Length: 453
Ligand SMILES: Cc1ncc(COP(=O)(O)O)c(C=O)c1O
Image (cartoon, rainbow, N blue to C red; front, side, top):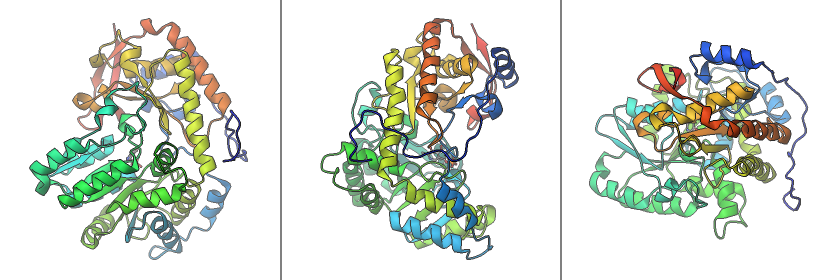
């Protein structure tokens, strides 16, 4: 497909197995919202027509992944499937130690239990919410140092996922002895799914080397980031995504990956690193809560599905379609005058709810209001990334429409755009929200809310 020059980028797959999607009435959706405390995480999936809550664990697996499941070796120790995964991770990332975990946040908890702790500081381009929570839970401080261009949400700067090298150097100069590692999240989910450039990663590595601080990668969406590098960064178009990915990982000392994203797996993740002492400590913690080091809380069949998914995500026809289909949704919303973060990332379209619902103050959660309106109007589930999710640390009031991989077709997306047309016409009537009850950490998952005004 790479040589094809058509306007329409067709889905580079055909569908072998289908799953019906539910349709509900407005009265049902109203009742479910009330019962759920206006929290979309509390709505049963069978009451959701199009689920754009997350791209995590929601991918459609391929025929080869389903058949790989049958090869799963369920031995407790030394399962063949572990070596299949280890081989694939080493091929792409090149790290000496590969430690499977049940999902990304388990890798975060283990890594920051090893390197975090009171007095430590972990900088990054912007930590994702579970990463931040795990750094904080270890007693350390999570510091976001996004590049200044990331703040201009409507600008087309191609690498808004970059870290600010100036801010990083200032922090390193002042506190390098307290910094166990610097984490680059690729792509930068919390700030709009924006990629970091290879040049920014190279410069980051150079700086960190000077201060003897290791670099780690949150690789949840590494292939999407690598493809952005291929098509946007000078001199990179002739390289394959696999070559670019290898170069990214060669700059770092280790990576964590939630395999629920770019590995098309419904569950799983891993920590991969070079330092033998850190790896040993990580494996000891793994045994305590996840499982033996060759399965880490997963079944052998999961390890096989992840390995096969890691191979498939390097397919550039897939990545071309992936980026194009997400941009297609963004363009549809822009035609309706809806402000979105530009340029559109690969895994989601992010709506600037603060601007779109300017009559709702951030403390009344404009992003949440839009997310509730989408569900009420047509059963579309999305996710707020703003004051409800990040509290005082919120930098923007966003609504994320995450696109599950290989799940929805263009007509599903056309329908979502049509629903937005109706929301635009009544946006001034949408209410703000207040929190009725919420836990201290990661409150957006379980908070209960009520409309105000
Ligand atoms: C960038 C990033 N890192 C880490 C995680 C955590 O992964 P998991 O949901 O598998 O625990 C996520 C999940 O969305 C993420 O987007």
